[in-house]
Length: 463
Length: 112
Image: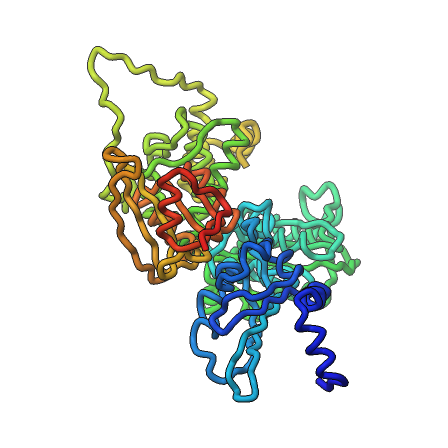
């Protein structure tokens, strides 16, 4: 930097007040440190970003003031600053308000004529945002989706940019991992004004599926006494989400592929075509690559859908997310059912940690809903869990025995009265958990018709 | 007996709960004197994270956490689990622990 009058600048800046005024006028957070990272000066922007006050932190090491992840890993001040090059990194800090703030951090050594480091200048500027949204200050997530594990963070980080494109999205993952919610969240974050329309290929027989997707005109086939618009036209301007696309019959796969090429819908029996603007998203819990090898799924359709592919990991691979989700659902059902259930017992915690959750998050959610419903104390204990989980494989062996007194003959323990409504509700939840949330199978298990199950679920407020 | 967990860096409180490589676990039995009888152990963590810390809190039956920086969601989570968390404390571990045992430690105090 060319300098006109160096001595005047040096004279001006050796005054403490003048230096503080200069630093405070700068919009970025600045800290001046000695060679060991002890803070000598900070400006007001630094105070604002970190929440510290200079009187509290001057004289202590930078890492205790900044609380930055970079300080704890590979800060050159803490190790050897070999080549004296400035370091610029993206990092995160914890403020005094317990908020995690993503920052751009720069460390520049102050080197004298003998190439010895005399001090360090650190600058911090808040970056445009971390890879995540913060939902109501409690759990990190995206809309209704909750998680902190690296795999899920990566998906959350990609979602805003995916939402802004119109490319097809294929979401894969086991049942109950949140594919539908992710698709809806992508739609909600996009600029598309139209509706989010969902169709489940597994739930409809093939002849109905074509009419459901593409619509039909009046009298197109026996029984078609009214014209039907079809989901593709209903989703005009929005998104059509096709779940369990692996179950789509081959004939319809061809028709869907043709639609993806020209975006034209021709209802069954009609000679007229309608142009639509629909973004397609699809989900599958089966391996579509295997389906292509088995010739039950068209390879070209997979290529067309596979423009953006997101894989939601099963709950057992999401590590610390289990705890977050446990807590999240516990609070959700506490509020919904207005029950003072505060926590899980140690044994329940152990059991949930060791359980493999084949039904993934849906199973965990249903299990906690069941437990909150049947829990009559502030703590969810083993006896409040559905029976199947206690009799399944993989029950941990190191559970501590309950401190509850055994029933003594002659002493009457009053059991809470069980209403028929509660029993029915319990049966429905049990069946849904056992079938991984598949309503058709749950209805069969209960010996009811699908519509009966649906009506009762609506009555009990089970989603 | 009360168990206290303190994330460490050297002899000082670690700046962050989720990134501390060492943890001091102090067991205090207050039957003998005002300060009580103290047992200490240090645990080294391979992969520090809030999750690892929480697992340790549960396995060690910790009742109190003294730390510097902690994320709000983790802080709230621990409080809901009925743990006492005194955060935003910084300084060498000995005076911090002593202040806690004397009942004078509050959030936001610096012992440098």
